[in-house]
Length: 247
Image (cartoon, rainbow, N blue to C red):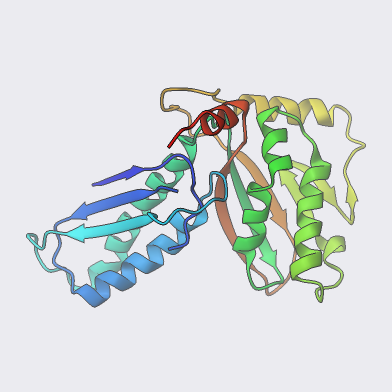
């Protein structure tokens, strides 16, 4: 069982994110800690609402030790179950973000650098990308700019990556062979419809949809690494909530 709280100031580094997972199995503390760190790395540390951190970021997995002691062979199944719970909770935090009307899922594949998470976070935390998606505006120039900015600043020694880069929004290729794909008839209309279809509105109640705006960035490197992170758009409601806030 798991519960989580947090809708703004979300950029975990393990804002106000509190997450608790409860179970009964009797697992030794050191092994329990190792399981928790691995799970948090690929779930709660892969989400962002606004890129702002908070001192209260917390993920706790607690066992009552009232259950049986599992065998070593059962650990993979236990880890898989905890991963599923934490993945669902962390993504729900993004989906319930302040003023959120789209969830952005950014996948980076075959990355020739060292930190694909940082590139993916650069994309989902870009104000220009977040606002474009909020308005269902298929502004692919902003996406290319974020990628180029990151590579120029953080990976200046990697050469030739543009020629192999393939960028997709949904299943639509928007960049390949070093150029934008702009000649497809009705491309902007198709992307607008895709973004609109994944908009759940600036809801006051928790949205039931699990649809995401999928952004795929494939560098085509033979020995590259990858990641997937989740972020939210930036709406007028987010500005209103945080501009009118009084502590």
